[in-house]
Structure formats: C-alpha cells, structure tokens
Image (cartoon, rainbow, N blue to C red):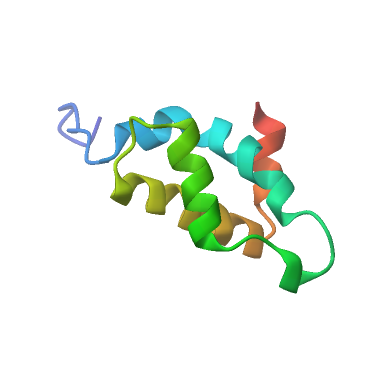
Length: 85
C-alpha cells in the first residue's frame, strides 16, 4: 500500500522465472564450484541445462535465469539464495 492506501499494482514481469528461480539456483550452483575459472561451464551450456529442466520457460526467461545466477555468483550472493530454501 502507498500513502493513499491504494493497493499498488504488481510491476514485476516473468512470474514463471520467479516460480523456478531457487530450483534453478540449486541446479546451476555446482557449475560454479571449483577454483579454475577456465573450466567453468559457459552461459550457453547453462542455458541449455535450464531449458532442459524447465521447458515451460522461453528463451528470454532462460537468459534472465542464467544471467541473474551468474551475477549473484559474481557478487558472492548465490549462497544466500541457496541457504533460504
């Protein structure tokens, strides 16, 4: 609710992504294990894994999942998402 007590409209898109996001984090987290960055899986390969496991997602949604998980990993925040489950 805002100041005039009206209900704010949901502005978020990609509700399908939100529904599977923690599952996708658990699925891709092992890809970031290990110290050798050269041996890590490519974004294309991770997108293929996400699409295989969540066929209901379209290409844009798959990319959102992969890019967001990569960003969380870079910012050292992926583990916090995994710990919430």
